[in-house]
Length: 196
Image: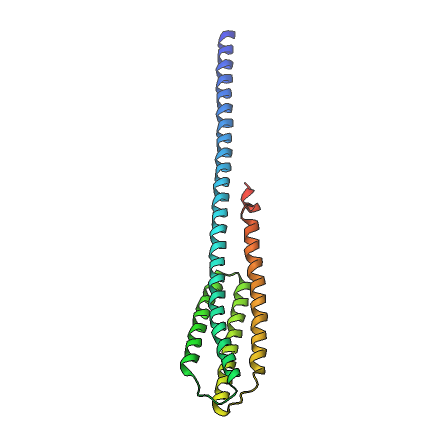
């Protein structure tokens, strides 16, 4: 009877040992899989952040280039008008070309609005609005020069130009901060992903 009891206890001990070993192995495997999942999630998150930053940077750069093109043409037209100081016919084709370049800048600004974030989108819209105002003031100045050769001295255009410069500076600061912030967080896994 003792031999049977010893055999049963041995078998039970072996079964319990095997069960415990299997339980520990399964738990270790689950932890290893979760750890690998976290690493994969981190890699995906970092790649997404890199992709997002690159898209934003390209959108911001394209927007600034389009703005610069429209602004340079608008400035050149204004300077030519101021240098003449005499009545000249209104150059509708030049105004239309500047307006077309403004529309290109406005379209590039929509991409910035889509890429975000909200603060940069708002700054981009403010910049587009300011350029629109500047283009309109140059057109009004051109109309005044065409009508009487005098214009308004260009003071309104100058003020609108200074407003445009201020808005561009604000946009650049926000865009740089957003791009720098994204770069800082590319190598850091969000804290929520570490939780089990």
